[in-house]
Amino acid sequence: MKTVKRNILLNPGPATTTDTVKNAMVVPDICPRELEFGELTLSVRDDLIKVARGEKNHTCVLLTSSGTGGVEACLTSVIPMDKKVLIVNNGAYGERMQAICDAYGIAHVDYNIPAGKPVDLAELEKMIQAHQKDLSHVAFIHHETTVGILNPLKEICSLAHKYKLENIVDAMSSFAGMDIDVERDEVDYLVSSSNKCIQGMAGISFVIARLENLKKTSSIKRNFYFNLMANYEYLNKNKQFLFTPPVQTLYALRQAVTEYFQEGAENRFARYASMYEVMKKRVKELGFEFLVEEKHHAKLLTAILDPKSPNYSFNEMHDYLFERGFTIYPGKVGSINTFRLSNIGAIYPADIEAFLKVFEEYLRLKKII
Image (cartoon, rainbow, N blue to C red; front, side, top):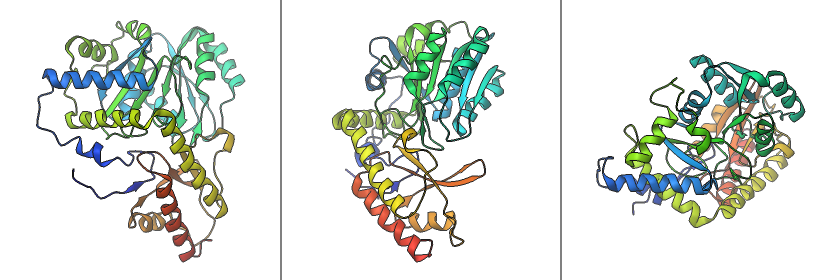
């Protein structure tokens, strides 16, 4: 097996991958219409359903796209032409849902909250009550990756069901990184991608859908490539993607899902959480403040307020860390400047410790602390 230079990606995806996932892509060329590849595709689909614990009532639709493509597919495939979706927005990805709906002319009611601030469930319920007759769905981000806030999954999904509405959950950076059970949590549609907590390569998005609900969308003809029902039916009937898939990326995802089960769900969740605790303790000791209150934190990504020192430059800090094997990400929330540290992917507490050492080295070198 070829060993590849290992970079520690502390950006929120694509995440660091194992060498075994990388090497899984080095396979003989194969036509994706071959039965062998079809069986591989179905095995990935079925196991993603298992990760979400949706074997009883859910299916999974695989798409060739970034995660945003999966969100676009869901919004444009399931909302009836004469209905609206209520979108909960407390970060850039909530805004992106709104922008997708605007691009397709899908009517939406917006519950806009300052980025990084929590959902007020009582206020959300009032909005649902005020617009119930016009709504079909409530859509929200589970883990708002731009700020690191965790929105209440079961509470919002249950609230939608209370008013006979379906829910759409963007779980891009929480799926396979924390405890999600689509049955227990009453999730109708969950969207994620191959390159975050499942630890595969970028290029595949997927929608885990309650099959009964998905079948009701067959009359909605708003899109083509991203039509969920068309993609579901074709895969189910022919064991093939409807359109050309990213062949090598699917082999990598097959390996990544296998490694998820080998590690064990609880062990992965605990590994991610332990890295957050290591990072949180030292970063706070260095005098930094977090954007999101601890009680609303997902423990997967942390938005950290920029230091007030005149010696601070994010770009300089990024480059210093990058040259030493660590990648971090900027973030701007309205007028608030932050940088973000993610602790997902094939990384471990020792990697976080090594990063913190170099991070502190830079801060002291530049007299920022």
